Length: 147
Image 1 (cartoon, rainbow, N blue to C red):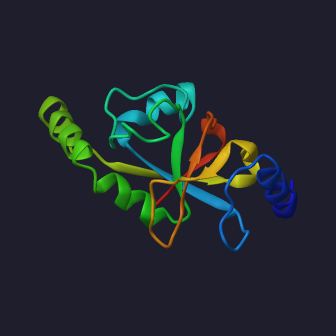
Image 2 (tube, one colour):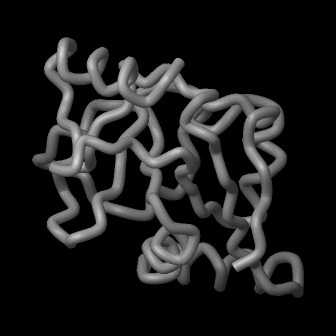
């Protein structure tokens, strides 16, 4: 599917599109290394993690089951690293396993996504938008990147 076709689908479905009208070719998601086996088995967004990294109470994401994506690998990394809940999990993990919890960043080509499930993250008011994918992303379409 071409970007213009995807944009048309999103607009027709009433989804938000960036002001420029562009959907990035690649989006990124950061996750703790201890979640990678679950992602391999169930896909990204296929199983709700036992530790949520942000409080979505009172937002449109409170009852949704999906994943947040960024248009830059460093932004994805920074969002996870900036979560107090991540650091709580890291402390628990390090105490239990005596090794440091890593942040893993995955790249996902938007051509591998059902773009009708992709919306702009309305909780993020920064210049660089982040996205919400209301579905499961198979591990087979994800590539680990170094940050």
